[in-house]
Image 1: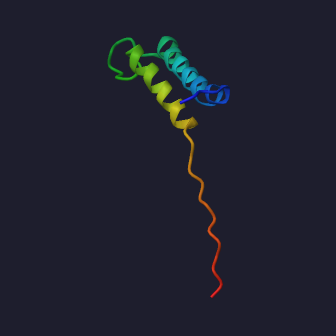
Image 2 (image 1 turned 90 degrees about the vertical axis):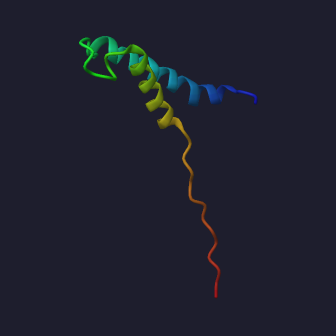
Length: 71
């Protein structure tokens, strides 16, 4: 599989950006007492940030228009 610049710009960079935002959420807002399962662990919050970004950049299926048959 050959990667091109469009793939990197449209798929990989948003996921990395989501990971950075997830970690920064842990760092600036996170729960340090350990009672919050997502925000108390930097690995989990980074993973969730990347996962949300990956879901947003996944391609969606478009409904193909089928020609109507005249009866």
